[in-house]
Length: 87
Length: 244
Image (cartoon, rainbow over all chains, first blue to last red; front, side, top):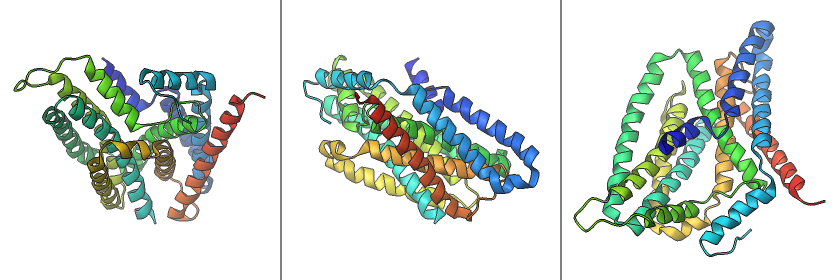
């Protein structure tokens, strides 16, 4: 079961926001391509880039843990190995 | 220039994945028996080889050029943005730094609880851990190289990059443990995330009928834009975590 879960995380990432966000970017791009007609060929790339940047910013903000939690999990990992964390 | 960028992207992505697989196989070999580690790893390599032989031709034969570019772009974005997300969080101190040495130690710890069978009997626990580790990293390698190789200009740069990565990782493997601790994996993975995401945006937009200003040189400003956004967000997150 954990193997299947790992495989799913491998393909779709740790957050569903990533595949969903990319699907929204493609759908919005197809819609804009139909609306903008010839202008799409010149500006479409920047529209896709803006969409991807928005997805990146969103998934980073949503999945960012408080620094204290991230550091304490790191300390726990090193403590199990009997060594001190190094920055 | 695209040749160099694609080869570089494939080489770094494959190197990082193979290093992680190597750490797991080494852990099994050191804490159990090297023969069982190699049997498990070889089994996974065979499965990945079959997957690569099937996946490449099927993708190329069954999808139109426009849809193929969008599919490749989306696959690269799925991997690239995930690596970039983790890299941004790691650089901001919001996630544990990536370390194959840590993976090595965790695998050894995982196997310590399972007793080693007597000489002459197969060590299925060790074989399974080596198989699973190599298979999961290998699938990622197959998907990334297939996506980069399925470009209309041909598979050569992706295959050259992947082959170079295999040589580099074999040389590092000969050094064994200590170099694993010296490799700046977090920064390497962040760089791979930027490259794969840039290729993803480039191919997906081409598949959607876009003509990039500057042609292939657009990859350079895509790399700069994504790297800039990621660095800015990483600094912002790091500053937000510091007490006022």
